[in-house]
Length: 531
Image (cartoon, rainbow, N blue to C red; front, top):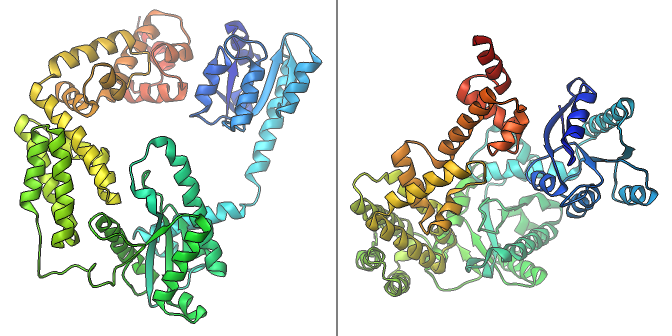
């Protein structure tokens, strides 16, 4: 079914268009309706539709302004139809300029509307039959390659990758990043990082020439790691008549010159065959972990003697870590920063950086214990989730001292709120918000900011009291309000959905079915039949 929305500030027009023809038999589902262009624009930012029917004159944002905005911002590529109560050539000209499908006059004629719907449907079906483009093929291949890199593949996926990458006896995975990607930056800077990542990726493909498929964009999939993956096979250096080390130097210099910034290579260990790439990938990631604890370099090679683990020694910097944990427990911000500096210094001086995993596990264990000491009933799995969701995970993944500092300061505040037992007042505030504003866009983060409480802690105490997440509770509350409206009003289902806080009617119906076992319309019908 194709998805359509109607945008008109006159409710009787909206209802008239819905009743004018049998939309479903024409292959359309009207998923939402809005009274102005701004509401429709917000919906389109998160929802794909195939057809937009909009009135030319509306409050807040007109149909023409909506058309201009979605074309300029590329929010939607849906077919756009403008309806108007009067003919105006200048309006029609503007609409055509912005790729308006049709400009029709009110009252809308059923035959004219059917003609438009069938034309749009035919165009959509024609697009479905267009052969897959090279860009789509490349994207599909990269998805398969990332599966092989991470060890999540079957024989079919491996064969697809082997069609384009040589299966060598000696393979290494190389992670490539711009040097300054390991510093804390504001979110606004991410666009620059993405641009740089793309530049490095394109340079790697040029460097590889006919072996361009050995480069892959963003294999980590992490929103704070801007990496490029590179599959090195022995024959790449052989074709140039140079050694592996010379090849790595040449690759580094070429990418740095092309991107205009120094790049860092993390070169994993040698493995036999493409099917073992994930083992090399794991060691390359490990080099990234260690970066923050080692002397600054441009190329980190797993084969270097000072990088490999010495299995005869295991270092846990207990004193340094215990001092850090104590500063977090005391919520002593200056001391937290000092102990992290000392921890990193000790890591570098002692060689314990090679055992970062063990030290990090010890830190996590101690942090969980800190929370448990505040509250015996605390869910340790919940604490692990909080730790992973916060900046601590980014800090470990990127070897960044600054991210560890940021996390520690936030976590210390979280523990402080546990000690103060602020739950009673906070829960009362949240309950009141749900009661009076359930139809609004309520989130834990927004409520946490409003009432000055850590959102992770708020979610935890909410779950403990109600036995479910805040999101599930809010959904159920809204649905019970919808039940009241179904039984005690003549409102349409889409009107009820909107009035209780659901913008997407389909989503509302699915949630209702999950709770009540039937659609809202059937629920209402059953109730009337039982009277």
